[in-house]
Length: 133
Ligand SMILES: [Ca+2]
Ligand SMILES: [Ca+2]
Ligand SMILES: [Ca+2]
Image 1: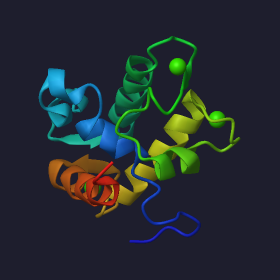
Image 2: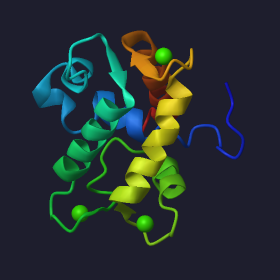
Image 3: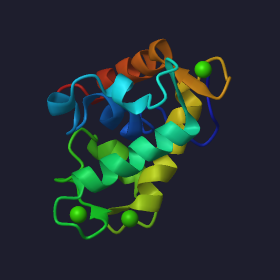
Protein backbone atom coordinates (compact mmCIF):
# COMPACT_ATOMS: atom_id res chain seq x y z
CA UNK A 1 0.00 0.00 0.00
CA UNK A 2 1.21 3.46 -0.78
CA UNK A 3 0.43 6.71 0.96
CA UNK A 4 0.96 9.76 -1.24
CA UNK A 5 3.71 12.17 -0.20
CA UNK A 6 5.44 9.60 1.96
CA UNK A 7 8.76 8.69 0.42
CA UNK A 8 9.58 5.01 0.44
CA UNK A 9 11.86 4.04 3.27
CA UNK A 10 11.32 7.19 5.29
CA UNK A 11 8.47 6.02 7.47
CA UNK A 12 10.31 3.32 9.34
CA UNK A 13 11.31 5.54 12.22
CA UNK A 14 8.71 4.24 14.61
CA UNK A 15 8.47 0.55 14.03
CA UNK A 16 12.20 0.17 14.05
CA UNK A 17 12.12 1.56 17.53
CA UNK A 18 9.07 -0.46 18.42
CA UNK A 19 10.77 -3.75 17.66
CA UNK A 20 14.48 -3.11 17.61
CA UNK A 21 15.10 0.12 19.42
CA UNK A 22 17.04 0.86 22.55
CA UNK A 23 14.49 -0.85 24.78
CA UNK A 24 14.28 -4.12 22.90
CA UNK A 25 17.43 -5.81 24.07
CA UNK A 26 16.74 -5.48 27.76
CA UNK A 27 12.97 -5.79 27.70
CA UNK A 28 12.53 -8.89 25.62
CA UNK A 29 9.52 -9.07 23.38
CA UNK A 30 8.58 -5.53 22.42
CA UNK A 31 5.34 -6.63 20.85
CA UNK A 32 4.10 -8.23 24.05
CA UNK A 33 5.23 -5.20 25.99
CA UNK A 34 3.32 -2.88 23.66
CA UNK A 35 0.19 -5.04 23.76
CA UNK A 36 -0.81 -3.86 27.19
CA UNK A 37 -4.22 -5.50 27.35
CA UNK A 38 -2.92 -8.77 25.94
CA UNK A 39 -5.46 -9.14 23.15
CA UNK A 40 -2.81 -10.05 20.61
CA UNK A 41 -2.88 -6.77 18.70
CA UNK A 42 -1.70 -3.22 19.23
CA UNK A 43 -4.35 -0.52 18.98
CA UNK A 44 -3.58 3.13 18.36
CA UNK A 45 -3.72 3.99 22.04
CA UNK A 46 -1.24 1.29 22.94
CA UNK A 47 0.93 2.35 20.02
CA UNK A 48 0.91 5.97 21.16
CA UNK A 49 1.65 5.05 24.78
CA UNK A 50 4.58 2.94 23.66
CA UNK A 51 5.79 5.71 21.40
CA UNK A 52 5.80 8.26 24.22
CA UNK A 53 7.50 5.79 26.53
CA UNK A 54 10.22 5.14 23.96
CA UNK A 55 10.68 8.84 23.30
CA UNK A 56 11.46 9.58 26.93
CA UNK A 57 13.49 6.40 27.26
CA UNK A 58 15.66 7.51 24.34
CA UNK A 59 15.93 11.13 25.52
CA UNK A 60 18.94 10.54 27.70
CA UNK A 61 19.70 14.20 28.46
CA UNK A 62 16.02 14.96 29.20
CA UNK A 63 15.73 18.01 26.98
CA UNK A 64 12.49 16.64 25.45
CA UNK A 65 14.08 16.30 22.04
CA UNK A 66 15.91 13.45 20.34
CA UNK A 67 19.20 14.11 18.62
CA UNK A 68 20.52 11.58 16.09
CA UNK A 69 22.81 9.99 18.68
CA UNK A 70 19.87 9.49 21.02
CA UNK A 71 17.59 8.12 18.30
CA UNK A 72 19.51 4.91 17.82
CA UNK A 73 17.91 2.55 15.33
CA UNK A 74 16.57 5.43 13.26
CA UNK A 75 18.24 5.78 9.90
CA UNK A 76 19.55 9.24 8.93
CA UNK A 77 16.97 9.35 6.13
CA UNK A 78 14.10 8.54 8.48
CA UNK A 79 15.38 11.07 11.00
CA UNK A 80 15.45 13.85 8.42
CA UNK A 81 12.01 12.90 7.16
CA UNK A 82 10.57 13.08 10.66
CA UNK A 83 12.39 16.34 11.55
CA UNK A 84 9.80 18.58 9.99
CA UNK A 85 11.23 21.91 11.18
CA UNK A 86 14.76 20.84 10.22
CA UNK A 87 16.40 21.80 13.52
CA UNK A 88 18.26 18.49 13.74
CA UNK A 89 16.23 17.28 16.70
CA UNK A 90 12.99 15.36 16.97
CA UNK A 91 10.40 16.84 19.28
CA UNK A 92 7.79 14.54 20.75
CA UNK A 93 5.29 15.84 18.19
CA UNK A 94 7.68 15.15 15.32
CA UNK A 95 8.45 11.71 16.71
CA UNK A 96 4.82 10.76 17.22
CA UNK A 97 3.84 12.27 13.88
CA UNK A 98 6.22 9.95 12.07
CA UNK A 99 4.89 7.02 14.00
CA UNK A 100 1.26 7.66 13.17
CA UNK A 101 2.34 7.23 9.57
CA UNK A 102 4.08 4.00 10.56
CA UNK A 103 0.89 2.72 12.13
CA UNK A 104 -1.18 3.45 9.03
CA UNK A 105 1.40 1.85 6.76
CA UNK A 106 1.78 -1.22 8.93
CA UNK A 107 -1.96 -1.79 9.34
CA UNK A 108 -2.22 -3.85 6.17
CA UNK A 109 -5.87 -4.86 6.59
CA UNK A 110 -6.91 -1.41 7.86
CA UNK A 111 -8.78 -2.65 10.90
CA UNK A 112 -7.13 -0.06 13.15
CA UNK A 113 -5.09 -2.73 14.97
CA UNK A 114 -1.59 -4.03 14.44
CA UNK A 115 -1.28 -7.78 14.64
CA UNK A 116 2.09 -9.36 15.30
CA UNK A 117 2.29 -10.37 11.64
CA UNK A 118 1.64 -6.81 10.52
CA UNK A 119 4.27 -5.40 12.89
CA UNK A 120 6.85 -7.97 11.85
CA UNK A 121 6.15 -7.43 8.16
CA UNK A 122 6.50 -3.67 8.53
CA UNK A 123 9.64 -3.97 10.65
CA UNK A 124 11.14 -6.30 8.08
CA UNK A 125 10.63 -3.69 5.39
CA UNK A 126 12.12 -0.99 7.60
CA UNK A 127 15.05 -3.09 8.71
CA UNK A 128 15.94 -4.05 5.18
CA UNK A 129 16.05 -0.39 4.16
CA UNK A 130 18.12 0.51 7.22
CA UNK A 131 20.48 -2.45 7.03
CA UNK A 132 24.17 -1.77 7.14
CA UNK A 133 24.10 1.36 9.25
CA1 LIG B 1 17.57 14.68 24.10
CA1 LIG C 1 12.79 19.11 14.82
CA1 LIG D 1 -4.52 -4.69 11.15
